[in-house]
Length: 294
Image (cartoon, rainbow, N blue to C red):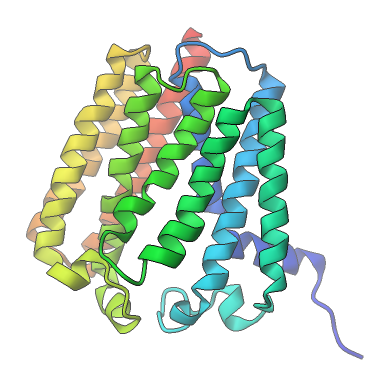
């Protein structure tokens, strides 16, 4: 008789395929969009529900990304063990139907718990990552991740739109910070795995212009986004946020300054994780600030 994998194994595979860790980051961006808004009519339960819907929609988009890219994932050492590559999850087209249904349910639920504008921004985010970045741009241009960075920006606007403050300066600034953060985050990773991206014919910036020029582009992106993130103290955020943003931003800049001189794989990976550390502190800073002073 055929042996079936336990449910915990399938859940682990789905967690991996859906890039749920990235989903939590996108969810945090939406919560930060609420936190930096001047005001909100959402109660605690509505905020929690919105966070779950953003996580679900983001994970559906992430799963489509892994399903669509299984051919190039198979070429790269870093991604060769993903579930659709190993066929631990069968890569049938039926997945697309399920992911569309899940996305539509998340969009409708977002509309019901908040408003149409928030649902539109959520759609824009998952469409940008799932279609614009994954299908249209990733294999064609080094601008792939620059434009793909809009997915994180839209997540911030989901939160601010749900709070009724889409065009307030705080959320707009944070959305630009997220847009600027994404390229250096992925370009650092691409420096570390330049040969693998070249082997897979993915035109990431280090493959196209080399590591030195990429490290320079990373540094200037980072400098601008760190300075811009600190300006949020002028729009609702207090000294608590400023300490979080300054601490993460300083370490972020320090690592990227080192990368200017040494584009080794080890330092590129360290810089990649420094970007995650920075964004984590930045988003936590907005939430702690809002919880204490709102």
